[in-house]
Image 1 (cartoon, rainbow, N blue to C red):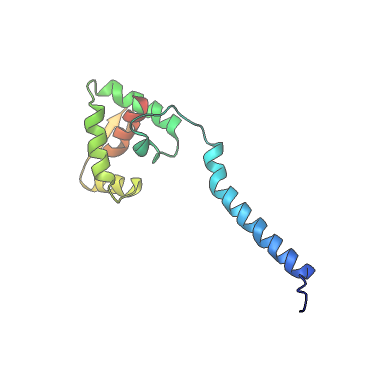
Image 2: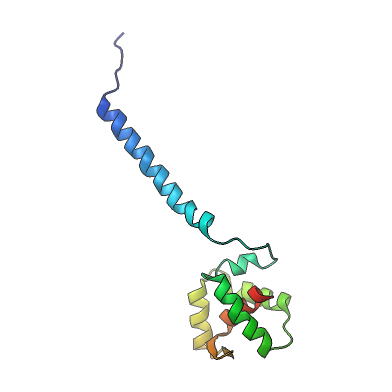
Length: 122
């Protein structure tokens, strides 16, 4: 029976592939580890769509000041329906096309974004 030998080239190639896969996995998970973590809310599935949640909180505070009574559960239910199989940019484009625009604190934005910001500040 002939003994199989592993060449140095095969070891280097295998190690290179393993390193590339490890770097890719780290690249996919590292941003999640580095970003700021927030206390859990019932709306995290919606708030995860926001790129900068801290900025959204500031805008959301202005939204909450301009609209004194907000029903967070109703807003979340409506947003979940709007986001069904659509991204935030697609929903904002639809809001703009349908004339659903909000103004708060000098910011003019699509209604869905204003509501997301309000939820983040809630």
